[in-house]
Amino acid sequence: MESCAHEFYKEQNNTLVLKIKAVPNSSKNEICGLFDDALKVKIKAPAVENKANEELVKFFAKLLKVPKSSVILKSGGTSKLKTICIENCTIDKFKQVCVNIDL
Image (cartoon, rainbow, N blue to C red; front, side, top):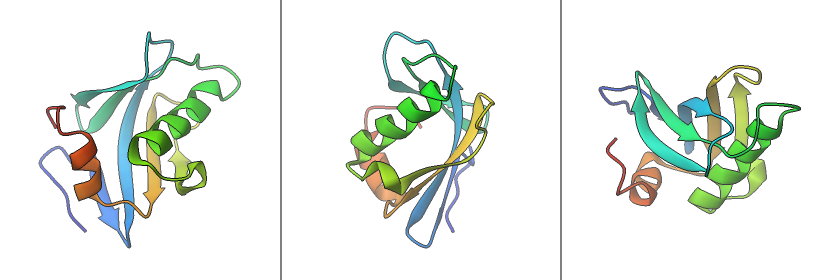
């Protein structure tokens, strides 16, 4: 298991676990950087009827080029603070995709 000073991620058995601070009703889907010990992610969808969670899963699947079934909302279904697991993904792959974000 790896970690960093911010502790927003850990990697276990080829699965990346991310702590997320979701911001629904945003103008676009994007990773904004860090918020405390979580990754701040803006999501276009509203936080009603699970739409923001579904959009979050789609966003990370597209970003990391993995199937939606590989992105699992582990906790925080009704909270802005969430934990997601991304199967078959490493922190190195994540950092390559997020090279322009100050993490």
